[in-house]
Length: 236
Image (tube, rainbow, N blue to C red):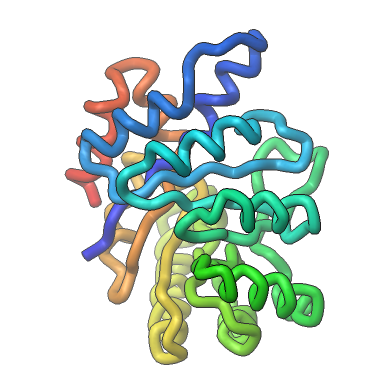
């Protein structure tokens, strides 16, 4: 059954806009779990534009489902991950100038660099997911270098200009999920999913967890976190 992990980054974005303490992403995580989320996701960026180190350490102590730490595979971030010991690390590409993650990590280009990072994390009992474009060659590379999970980038699907383009991209996601399952990988997905487009992706065979943040946080600003999460769960 497809489950929901709520990405709380943009609760921290609102906090950082004023530089104060509110709203607290840790509080948001508690509310999301009480509403039925099966995981909490947070991206600790190198520039600390939203989530802060303090948030990750407190989330580790308070999340009762599981904590998925998104991060770039840098020496600094690996050190933090080994200190925090989240349930899972999702390796994502990161550019300082981007507003949000724009594509999957180029696994084939970075195989040699990723192998040691994945090995180190797994030796410390941390599951490792790679955030990748829906591409069969990238999936094979992820399996080759020891990832336990992949997260399929759904941005192209979510931003499709029309129904036909969205349907074509959905078929690509389905084919990739099937290929990944055959290779023994656990399949997650995320980026740009919202209340209008999530159901077809949730219905893909072998889909595990959907990581959804912005649309839930935006909805929560109007109706509250509890209702926003429950409405998304109903669609999933």
